[in-house]
Amino acid sequence: MPDKRSVTVSFQSWQQEGAQQSILSGELYKLRSGWTLIYREPPDENGIETINTLFVHENEIRLRRRGTIFLEQSFREGATLPGKMETPYGSHDVEALTSLLEIELSDSGGVIEWKYDLLMQDQEVGSFHVRLDIQEEQAG
Image (cartoon, rainbow, N blue to C red):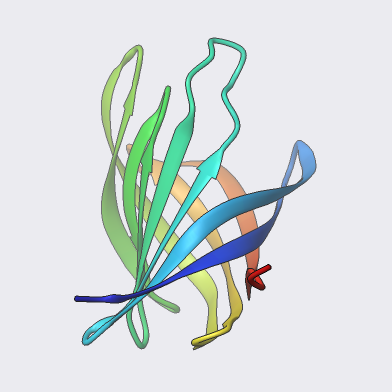
């Protein structure tokens, strides 16, 4: 049985269109192979909640995002890795060229930060910088 902790996730992202910041609730699971972080974004304008699952290993993370847009993408510093994006307009193969990946996690939380360029059909879709500050919720 994995070790589960309720956490608060301070989500920050930067891209060409500007910055975004949210405080989200989630769960952090400690597994033999690493960590799994699940956090939920509030419903969008269509009332659809986005659930993010981040699989964290020593030198790589894999994000599975389920909402209006489905994204499954891996990130490893210095590597270009394939992924998949599904939108209401169809399915697309994507790639992420990751220039930074920092993982500092413990039982009580930590930080996961990464920067990447997202490519679709060999064209850059955008440059992104994401930082998650994870803190265990205190009981009581």
